[in-house]
Amino acid sequence: MTSANPLNTPALLRRLAIGGYYVASLPWRKYQMRKLRAQRRVPVVSLYYHRIADDRATPWTQSFANFARQMRWLKRHFDLVSLEEAQQRLRQGNTRPTVHITFDDGYAANCEQAIPLLLEEKIPCTYFVTTHYIMRGLPFPHDVARGQRLAPNTLEQIRAMAQSGIEIGAHTRTHPDLGKISERGRLHDEVIGAGEELQQAIGKPVRYFAFPFGQRRNLNPSAFHLAYEAGYEAVCSAFGGYNFPGIDPFHIQRIPVEDALIPMINRVTLDPRKLWSVRQYEYRVGSGSAAEQGVAAQ
Image 1 (tube, rainbow, N blue to C red):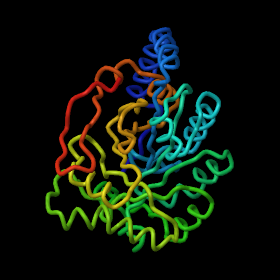
Image 2 (cartoon, helix red, strand yellow; image 1 turned 90 degrees about the vertical axis):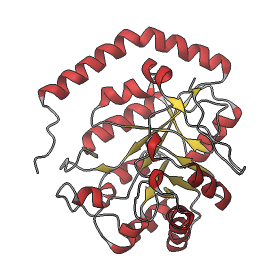
Image 3 (cartoon, rainbow, N blue to C red; image 1 turned 135 degrees about the horizontal axis):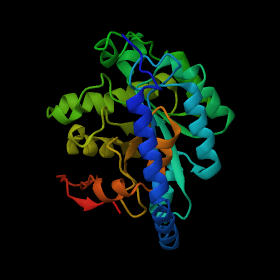
Image 4 (cartoon, rainbow, N blue to C red; image 1 turned 30 degrees about the horizontal axis):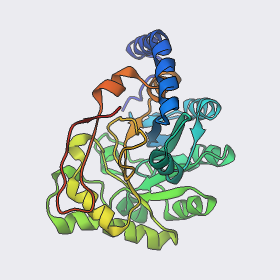
């Protein structure tokens, strides 16, 4: 398979367009940030990555150079906080630009440079792993489907990360689309059983869960309720919204990151399109039913 070329003309033109859009909208962004600070409603942004490696083997693989550039830019301009601190700011109000870093799936390549960088720079991170492939050393099906057999983390690597302060979270057992699963026993195994197995394997509490794929169509209110009833402290999705103080801190919306600096800067600095178009996924935790309601993310 041909690796993605970061210098191809369409990608370069797109980044130039994003850069122009960012600069043109910068006065509006600054105005909105001043207003949100006064209201203690500065959003918490949660970013998610998958695999950091220079081979760019898949669309969800990013180069280490760009990852390091992004982390250092964020450290200069944002508070980089744990997921626990992110939730506290959502409950209590927030006056500072805030980002939380997450990873999904669990790739061995992340332990070569990305995780050491986060530890060196003291950047908190939640690392969500899919237990079936970690425990058995098997490649992820979404990589195999693209002709790639990329190594997952070993259990020893996950344990070492947990001991060094990386928060390890659950990402199901087999990485299914939970939005398509209605059978409660299967949901329980993927959401709860996988987390219990992971907790026992690493000897540390597993407090957080992330939906595979994580788009609105992949979410499942029943899975939210199972996670809540089992004692998870938060559930993460991945459809690109901001988290404003006053929303339900049990559900953390996350934003994907591209293999370049300017698209990330555009996304974390109050992109007007996201403020207007991405709507919060709502549900009633702790009751017998759940519903998705359209409420503005701002």
